[in-house]
Image 1 (cartoon, one colour):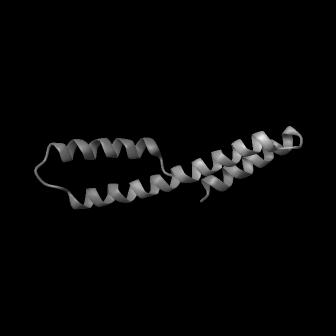
Image 2: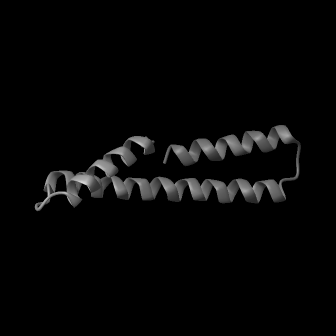
Image 3: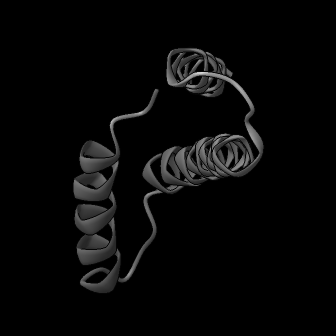
Length: 81
């Protein structure tokens, strides 16, 4: 999983350098562009996991231990994608 605070810090640095420069650092630009794609994928995975968890909370018929076990399984699968 990508450390979002680290990427945010790099993004802020990138934006400041880009705003204060007359040229573009292609290597840095490419690096940031690749991270954006990875972050979008992680956000989609998290949203999918949240959707599944919300569905379970409203439709699960069983004891809370089974519900918690299923939620943990969803979270694990969502973060390992």
